Image (cartoon, rainbow, N blue to C red):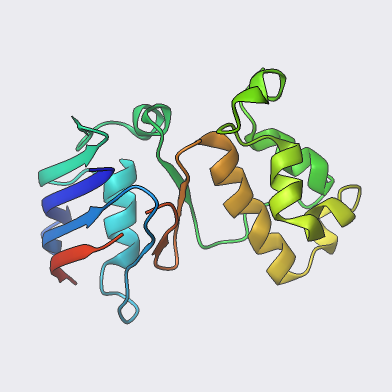
Length: 179
C-alpha cells in the first residue's frame, strides 16, 4: 500500500470537520477528493500532510504511520503538499522559483530517474522552460499553476499532493464523512 488513511478525525476547535475519513491510494494511482466548498477536502489533505493535527486516525505512508507528525517530517518521508493558491515569488524568474523547490544537492545526484530536478520539470512542463527567464508575476494563471505542482514533485520522488481536490501519484477506495 502506498498511502492509507484510516478513520481520520480532525477538529477546528469544537467543530468536528473530518469524521472517520478513510482512503487507500495504491502506487501509480490518482485519487480525487470531490465535494462542495467547505466539505473538508483541503482539511483532509492538510491532515495527511501534518499541517492540521488530526485528533485520531492513521496516515500510513509506505508502511509508516505519520499521523500527527509535523509537516517537515511528513515531507522528509516523501509527501508534498501543493496548496491551491498561486504561491510564487513574483519578482523571481520562473527558473529561480523552481530552484527554490529543489533540495540542496539534488540536481547533482539526479541520475536515478526518480529525482525531480529543474530539467525534469522542464521536460514535463515545457511551457515553464519557454518562460524560464520571465518573472513569476508575468505568468498566466494556468502557467503559474504548473510551478507549484512541479515544486511539489521536485521535493518528493513519490509525487506531490495538490489542493483543490487531487492527489497525483496515486488511487482509490474512500469512505467517511468530511464536513
